Image 1 (cartoon, rainbow, N blue to C red):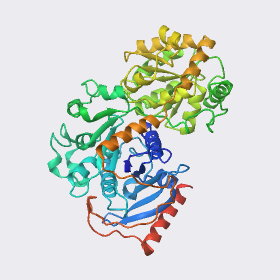
Image 2: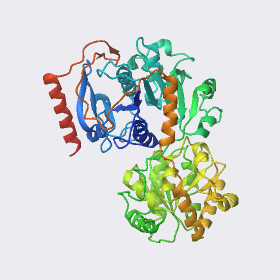
Image 3: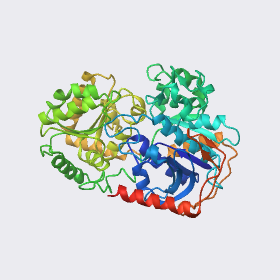
Image 4: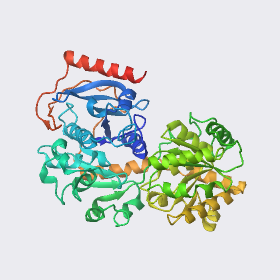
Length: 537
């Protein structure tokens, strides 16, 4: 079975959050089951620079410039990857979605529509000779146009799965973008991709895919309700028989304190002495008062309404008056970012604020903290608390979405029964959050019970194997005639091949001739090398 896995990001090529972790790990777990999975994503600067064994698979002429399909390998992992290289759209500073000032790229509709068009033609076998997808697995709104493009075009049609990673991010654009994204106007209806007068990439994926998944069982139930459905609960209820909630997994090759290269010391559940060393090193790194006994709370989060960042900020003085330390790593609302940075100046030694995302620091925070503060108004899965448990950092969460599937609140009964792994509260209020924090601090003051719960949390296992099997079962159901494909688990770099497409000004893909081979091919390879060299300076 051949699967094309389409995502806007994938660790370690590019990552802004959980989508990147999932897209870097799930395809590898699926390949362990014997599925020929190939990953496709846009060729952002950092992704193109990091890709291993790069080669040009195809050049697609366009009046707006040549689009390259570049094949390669995930660095250190062997997973085959294709990058859609349209420099005018993806070769930019900032993040995949925003510029350096934090503003969304104004042409995001065109950027991700181009990605979807290229992925659709690749899936149909029109770009790489000898490879076409049995199943296309599209992820989040950025890949939402893929299901309708595959459903509405004549010819071969792979089966489609669409995964909702966060229903609140819908890819909404004015109808004026329709000509530039290569979608016919007859799809702009309430039964199509129209959502309150706008084009919705997310609705497109939900409406036209064969199966829909989301990233935890509880979230799959919640989004069928008006409170959590973000206006799409009616459509989701209509498709409830096609909806599954499959819990995200953790890549323990990456998130594991026993061999994490970013840490000051490694440790295990049987020997937690290294965690103390990590705490002292983290306090020094962040300019916090070095005190091994004072509770250190990590807050690794987007600074958004979803993550109750407003509640945490307004409760900041009440949190810190409890004789704890708080360390934030995150980004989001610029106004709250500035207020939090000002607060760090006021609470020197007790509050550290780092705006942005730094993968090494995220690991050190998980290892050095005692508690993880992770409140949410809604939470599709919640990978950060799963990482925290592996590092013996006990999470404080709201009992919602995927967090209710994974974190066992420390009550009298769960403590006695030996199942407690963290602390949970019900209502998204300051008082409920602070009450939960007080329970956690009181528990931290009882070292024997605290270490017992740490070890229990570290023993919980959320790897990708079971989730991958559930995805495989969905693939087999929607593509029952897919042949068994024998492939090398770590095949050689992709050879340069030919296809037959042409891209117009509006990124429509039409039959034509792909320019590959000869001087043009060598010229493009040189371009890749020069671009990578510029990025490394």
